[in-house]
Image (tube, rainbow, N blue to C red; front, side, top):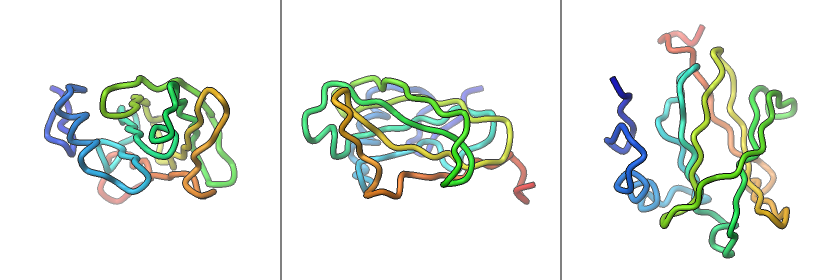
Length: 129
């Protein structure tokens, strides 16, 4: 059974992308579904500064753990859609923090004014342990 998302659809359909785009989240960043569950897939949608500047390629630079000590760092190209850039990421199987920022193919960065973006990854239990 597919997990439902905050945007009401279990798939990556155009309707879901449009909803993410139209939500106009700060910085043009949406992570869905939230809260993020360990071992599950989360979709990162980006339509921020780099996209607004006409970037043809955008890369998701992400890792897990504390703000100042990321591990399992990935640098992956996002798919360009008519609404913005999108990338699905599978979360680790443990409670952690998902940290990310973006860059284009010319190495221009969008790091949320130096703060990056961070989301807690929960282990699926109500008490967080």
